[in-house]
Length: 291
Image (cartoon, rainbow, N blue to C red; front, top):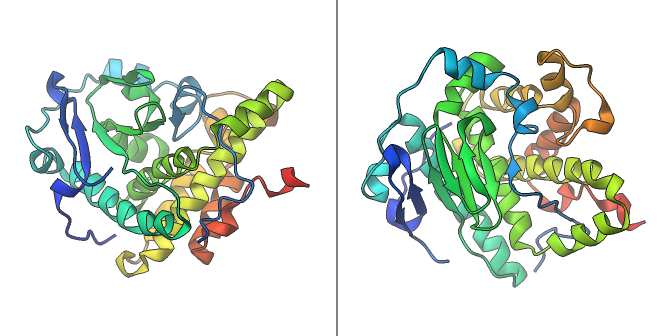
């Protein structure tokens, strides 16, 4: 995936790598397809499944092969240049801001850029401790996307999800949670959960699938950046983080009632829908709840 040029001063970066906690804020704080969408805000919104299930032994792998703590930058520009993954993440964040902010403006909905938070092995978020074994996640409390870029190596080596577009999909998925947060739908979910707590998992699956669809919409609207093989990389990544695939790889029997992010087939289906339509209105995974 071709990276657009971007100005680090126009994106919001926090860098905890090397034990630091530097904040380099940048940027500024119709119809958007919100429809009947709702969101589950249970602590943090994680890219894959529940941390213990999602990586199914990643902690043991890390303990067996200790990784050095990365050193972060002293400015947004330096943080975005720490390594290839950092540069990609910053470029993708800038593109996501440029894609979604006009949609919010056109719909008359307040928009605020998320923070991209880099950390190495462990860190802190507004939702509590950040651990690399959790994988990338979004914290609604501080509107932060949290990434330990070492995860991308684990994703490629252990989960078979390789390539720059697979990594872009991760960022775009987490940004999808930010979109959901900005739409102010947490109260709707709390109400739904209060009425039917047994539906919590099923509601979160819908939320995750919608974030996958939003990721596809972003990619479709930036089709000039797509290169040969990118779509296949994204779909492979979506398949790799399906609940059934993760449970099976962890030696567990897939149980649909325990799913929190959707099956591999579902995740691929909703990413495809966004990729094919480029229309956020097609991402309403909650439409049938309105009937």
